[in-house]
Image 1 (cartoon, helix red, strand yellow):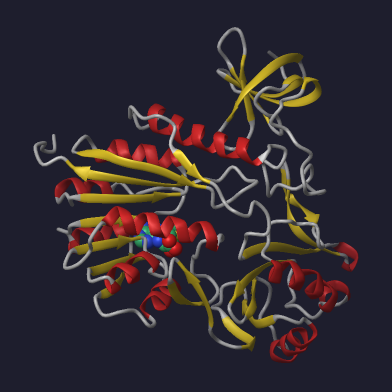
Image 2: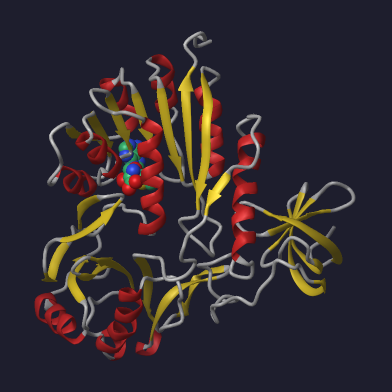
Length: 434
Ligand SMILES: C[S@@+](CC[C@H](N)C(=O)[O-])C[C@H]1O[C@@H](n2cnc3c(N)ncnc32)[C@H](O)[C@@H]1O
């Protein structure tokens, strides 16, 4: 089928990236963005990948009962969300299918589609939002999100985005007003990444990129005074370190009962409500932690490990990012220590352990991590994953010595195709590593 050919397909599911997916009579799979299970749609091929095709919808011959008008008026142009055209229960069902499919297809596991814990708030849930600001020729400034299908372009966002928590939704338009024509009150540079993080004290603004801010202190102070709710402004010039430009050095936030310091850079989950439920699930999967040796791998600011140490475990956190390590150590309970470095190098030095938690970035575990776990197996592994495909690959690499106790997914990112999964594995004492 050549690009530009037009034909009709029935959509019967949602693929991992959020596209609707259907099948041709000859078995080839077709991906069509912004379609829903139950749609029948005439499409045009935009890419022929051999056994799969990517296509765009031209007209709908039948509409899915799971559709709804997208709540955001930027949805068609913005690259941030993929599932706003689906009613929320259909988003949850799609997430369950995506995780189940990955575990069966890539992981070779015999599992059914898992339970997905929905969010209470499907909008207004993000405590962190990153915008991109570009200075164009002629002094014009655009600031917003990357465009759908054109990541180099920026879709202007004023007050349209429906995902941020209320404090961010209020600060962003006020900040745009306050930075002045040509954004001259911000650091110079063609492109800046502006991250707003809502914290107990208000909103923290982290400006990443641009040149050193020679008049930073004055301009940042003026900006902060002009934007109600802005608690602190940080800047990191290209090739430099984070510098506090105005306001308070420390912000705080609480997730899953743990209050931690928030500074720019260190990873924290964006959805405090669902992340709290996820942390409770990890805590429950560990069982009674008293006196047990636990590794919190890829610990970030140490939310799992700190809580388990408070409950009596001896916990070692493993974390690569120095900013996260610093936050994890601040105010940590006795019984929780953190080793800075790559988990694939540090894990073998802290095994054996009773329980190992791993929560890697999207790329999943470095090969060295399953190797170390096979060599020195813990009784329980709790794997928290933000990518079902790499999760499934890693479970396969762990081998057959562990049995799957539970799989639960959490909708930390409503309206998007991202999904977080928690898998608990128990060592089968009768088996040996082959
Ligand atoms: C998905 S976050 C999880 C953080 C934490 N568990 C939480 O719930 O907030 C992944 C973390 O792994 C860290 N990281 C990335 N690569 C790593 C590696 N090779 N070894 C150790 N930590 C790593 C990142 O800096 C980040 O803090």
